[in-house]
Image (tube, rainbow, N blue to C red; front, side, top):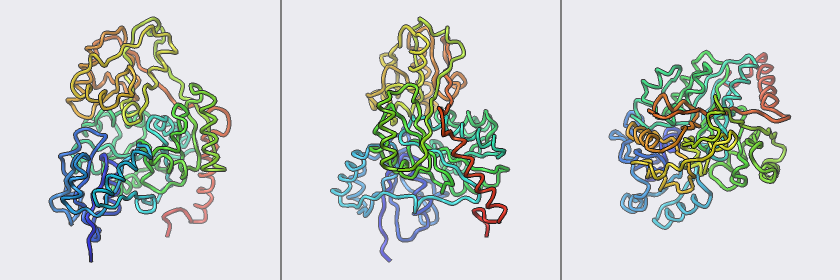
Length: 454
C-alpha cells in the first residue's frame, strides 16, 4: 500500500482536530509535520506521541509556516492540508499556489470527514469572522436553553497553548480550574463568562475524548462555542452563524466563514445599532442569495460601563479583545464604541509606549487602530501587556475584554470595564429558533428515536 506524505498547515486548533479525526492511526498517510502561524510560540514544539498515536512514537514536529516550501521539497510531501481559519479566500489561494509550485497537492477538509456525532442534542454557534459577537451569542443561547428547562454544558473551540498532552481534555467549572490549567488571557476571556453562569466548559486538544467526557455531564444539551470563523467539530442539531455588518461582505470572502454561512440554520446579524443600514442590508441580501429561506435574527450588542461619568472628558487607554483586532482585522471593538458613547475627550494611542511582543503585534497587524489588544499567550507576554498599560499616560484604562483584566494584569491607573451582551431586535428571536428544535426532540424521545438510540 502506498503512503502519502502529509503536511498539515495550522494554528494549534483545527489542524490538530483534522489529524485526530482523520489521519491518526490511518496507515494510508504519513504526517511529517504541522506548520504554525497566527499564534505565537507554537512552532518549535512537538505534537506529543501520547496524542499522535502508534505511527508516531516520537511525535510530530511543529515548524514555522515560513519553512513550508523547504519542507515540501526536502521531505517529498505529497499533500498539504490547509487547516486554520479567519483568512480571506485570496489568502488561501496564494498559499495553494505556493504549495502547487513546490510540488504537492493542496487540500481542504470538509464536515464530512472531520465532524463527530454526539449522543446528546448539540447546538453550534459559529461566525463568519472573528469578533462578530459569537461569544455573547453563545451566552445568550445558553441562557435561553436553560429558560426552556434544559441544563447545558459548553465545549469551546481549542486554544491549546501550553503542554499539549496535559491539555488533551480540560474541564473548567471554577476560577481555580483556570489557574490550575495555567490559562492564557484569551482562554480566560472565553471560559470565565460561562463559569460565572454556572456552566461547565470543556476544551483541549482531543475533541473525541472531550465529547465523551462532556456527554457524561449531568446536562441535557451540549453547546459548541466556536472559535474564529471555523466550522463546528461536531454534527449540530442547530447551527447558528453570527455576521458583522461592520465588515459587510466578508461573509462571502473569508474562509471558512462562507462555508459556515452556507451551513447555517439561522443567521444572526449583530451590531445593527452601530452599523449603517446599507451594510445591514448587504448582509441580508447575501444571506438570501446564498442561503435562501434561512431564518435571520437581528441583534445588537449594547455596551455598558459601571460608571459612565468616569469616562466623560477624560483621556482613555482602550484595551480591546486581542483576536478581534489581530486575525479578526478590526481597528476597534466595544471599547471604542463605549468611549465615544460616554463622552471621552481623547483616545491615547498605546503604540509609542508598547514593549516586547506587544510591539511585534502592532507591526504584524498594522490595521489595528489606537487601541491595545489584550495579548497574553504566555506569562512573558502578559507581563509586557501590563508594562505597556503602565507606560501609557492616560486618565482611565477602559477594559473592553470579556474578563476583568485586573485579575491577571497589574494596572496602576483608574479603570472601568466595558460589558456587552446580545439583545435581539424584533422577531424572530433566538428563542423562536431554539424552541422548535427541542419540541421536535422531546416528541421524538417519546418514540425512543433520539440520536444515539439503537
